Image (cartoon, rainbow, N blue to C red; front, top):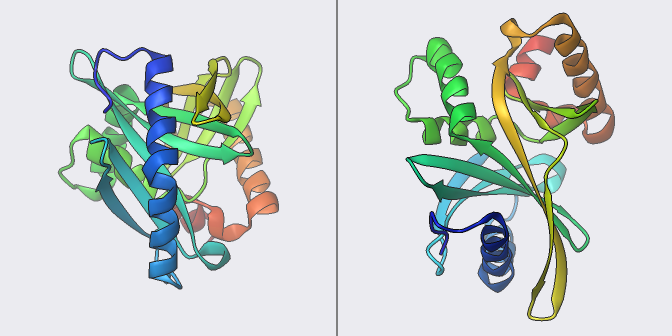
Length: 216
C-alpha cells in the first residue's frame, strides 16, 4: 500500500509490484470483457494492495486504456501519476496538487462544476486521450485539455526487480498548469507544434476535447 512516508524508490517499487502482481491481469481481463469500447469512460479501482487506480477506456484503435495511480503525500499533498509503458520500462508521469488547483481554477470558470482538486485532475485525464511531451531546453511541455503542464526534463530513474523481471522506472513531475489563454507566444508555438506532432504520430482522435473544438 502506498503510504505518506515512502520515498520515491519505495513508491516506484510499490507501483511496479501492484501492476505486475494484479493490475496487468486485471486490465487484460477488463479489456476482453468490455469487447468493443464505444465511448471514452473512466473507472475507479482499489487493488488488493489498497492502492487507488483510475483507468480510462477509449475507443481509439479498436479499444485502449490508460492507467493512473494516486500517491498520498505529507501535509495534505498528493500527486496523480500516469503510467507510460515501453518494453521493460515504465515512466511515472506526475501531476501534483498545485497542478490540480491551477487546472481546477480554469475548469470551474468554464464549466461551473464543484470539484475538489483531485477530482479535477481525474477530469483532465479523461479529457486528454494522450500525453505528448515536447522538450525545450531543460523544460518539457505536456499538452493536456485546455492548456499545458510544465516541468523539468530532469527526473529520477530506478532499476527494480520484481520476481525476476527487471524494470526501469522513471519518475517525472509536472510543476504547474497554464491555460491556453495565458500562454506566452513562445509557449503557443510549442503547443501548436505538439498538436501537429500528436496528429502526425497518433491521429486526430488522440487530441484533447479542447483541441478538437479548436479545429471545428
